[in-house]
Image (cartoon, rainbow, N blue to C red; front, top):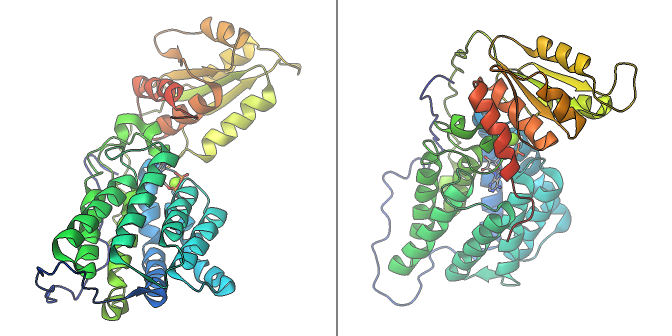
Amino acid sequence: MGPGGGRRVQPPGPRGSGARVLPAPTLSPMTITSIPLDLSFFRRFLDRATTVLVAHAAYLTDLDAAIGDADHGSNLKRGFGSAAQAVADAGPATPGALLTTVGVHLTNTVGGASGPLYGTVFRRMGKMLGEDAEVAPETLGRALAAAVASVRRLGDSAPGDATMVDALQPATDAYIATLGERQDTAAALKAAAEAARAGAEATIPLQARRGRASYLGERSIGHQDPGATSTALLITALYEATDPALCAVAPEPPVREEPAAEERAPGRVGVVLVSHSRELAEAAAALARALYGAGGPAPVVPAGGLPEGGVGTSPELVRRAVEEADEGAGVVLVCDMGSAVLTARTLTGETVRIADTPFVEGAVAAVVTASAGGDLAAVLAAAEDARTYRKVTG
Ligand code: ADP
Ligand code: MG
């Protein structure tokens, strides 16, 4: 994507709703529920969510290609595309059971971070809805609040990190606030959909702090988060489920921008993986290449073990690897430990630098950032940032 080329989300609809006049605010202290939040409502929601996510799969994947690994749309297409069958097999009798079935199914079928995260959203909401045949609007608000809390806990993420939380949190807040003011479920869901869409767009200027996009550091700025975008589509589907006429509108396929020709320096930063084990270095290189995201992988050269085989590090192997990885933009060495570090140190200079980072995480972060066209300082910083990824929180 070209400089400043953040893509904007254009979720479908609520088209045709421009002329739709929202019910006037009511002063009644009682909740007026124009649409029952019953099993048919949630079936309509799932159906609409599936249609819209499938129609937007290529778009979501494009967004993920810019800052991740180009699989968000296909991940969700796989999960939602088969969710209706999972629901048909389970035959849920209540809204809560339906959402729980979808959550379990998403966790089991969606690869990537979004699987467990969306799985949690649906399971948590399902649990909060309990056995009710018809859900009270306030209960839906509490379920959304519990869902966003569970995503934040699982992902160790907060608003402003440029993740799905940036759409889900404002949507939840808007739903609860609007329901409190207007006692109207459709109006509250419409406000939620608008807030989610605005939240997704607001991720464009943010630097990603969680998920794969965070490997890019500052280079993630200028791109809309794919997960926040799919959340905006999901919340919009929840609003559209209030009215079968809205659901009937075909989702407008979003405009797919032609990816701008990548503007890169003549060469990219090379990455050399120095390990005691040839197999480990080669496997880490394969993993990093598999996760590189957009643009084609930067040179990544494994230098593990001894030339004649066996465990150890060889200055000669590492020197040759540095030569091979050098395209003129510098080389970053990612080492496992001990003599790998000592060997690497003998080769460093102004354009050949060691990253102070754990081996696997550093290898992935360095390769992803180098592949995206980051310069030597950016690749070093991304690799060193990998030291700060927490695996246990709280
Ligand atoms: P992966 O990143 O594993 O390829 P997907 O591409 O399907 O998985 O999903 C990526 C989306 O998941 C991101 O755009 C972001 O919204 C969300 N995400 C990733 N990690 C986190 C996290 N720790 N907390 C909240 N959301 C996250
Ligand atoms: Mg992805």
